[in-house]
Length: 173
Image: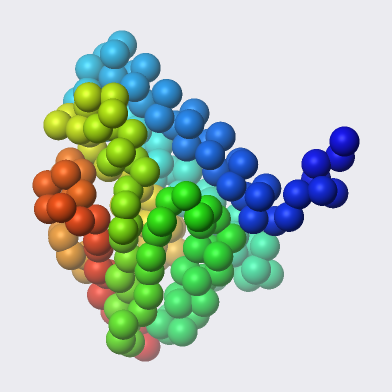
């Protein structure tokens, strides 16, 4: 059976996203067991940020934009963010995002799959979220200046605040 010709785009995205998230979770738990939570979190966050920089450049290429394009307007950035989420966002993540006003991005999770997973693994008190780091990695790779709220992403926002939401204010035209 040729599943690539049978499955629709959503099913393919869900399958590969779940595989990646499962690997990511198993890798993080394994590294935490080997080197401790503090070192594992640093390694994980650095890896996510580096991956995100590569990922956004690949998405720019798929969009037909130069990898080194300079983003000068909010409309350009909004198109890139919207395209990125539409490409990578599987339904199981229950992610939301939007642009409530010019130069503002707001996003988060109604239910966070990572929070659920690390809670089940008994690691929620030592977990440092890498998901928000991914967004930061995109923005930094694009060279976009921004301020984020909360400014420091220490731990898990869902665990600490009862919700996972960030807001970024951009300094663009």
